[in-house]
Image (tube, rainbow, N blue to C red; front, top):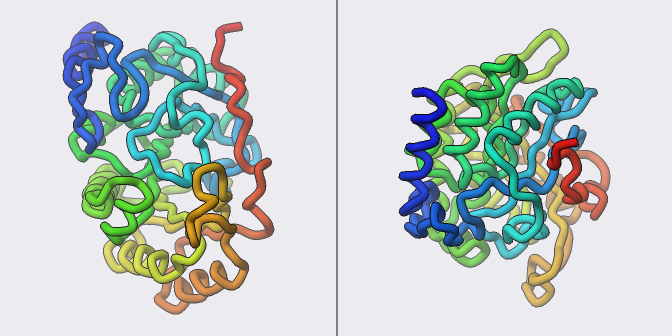
Length: 311
């Protein structure tokens, strides 16, 4: 399908949007705001080299991270709440998005890292196609909350090289409590299965940088070690050597969780050690863990629209 055909398809999709599992059917093409908090015009809050991903993603040069505004999941403890509500960022064209990809490649980025782009998939497909036609050759990373429809993920087949989803919950009750999405576990399971279908074998270059594959993340929440163990056990039992599992301790409490009996504090060293010990006991060897005090405000990038506007 050519670019014009992609544009027509995008316009049709956004007239009654069902891109994400919320299926709110907002007429985003007419400027209505969906459950993702944004309309149909792409809004980006930052496009710059990013050093804080897994080592195989960031490498030494950095990942070319493009942070999209808006989010359809809406976790109460969101680490990127400054942009997830859709208010921060600059509106840009699909052509400009393609230019950003090429500019990040020129800055020696290891890859293009699409951060929370699910509500803009039709435009991302257009922009990636345009950029690849103009010489974009580095891997494409799809960095996601894990709350993705299989049908939407299939639109990305052949364009995305590395999937980097979260698997936040295996408990429907917890998913409803913290994200208002009791269907999250089943949606995430189906989505990850589709990602692995598209990229069934992890591959790396001579420098240890991932070029193909799936890395599934789980952010350990304070007081929820049992949930975390269930998540990593499911992933390992289901996929074994087909994926890498990234276990994170960087949870940072912010506004809105002060009164929660668990979320008001950071993860303790002992909680994280219990998760890592369990992962080792069940045989996980293809994984990543974090060292030191990652739960710092400085760990969250400045969403200052760096790299978004055309120079």
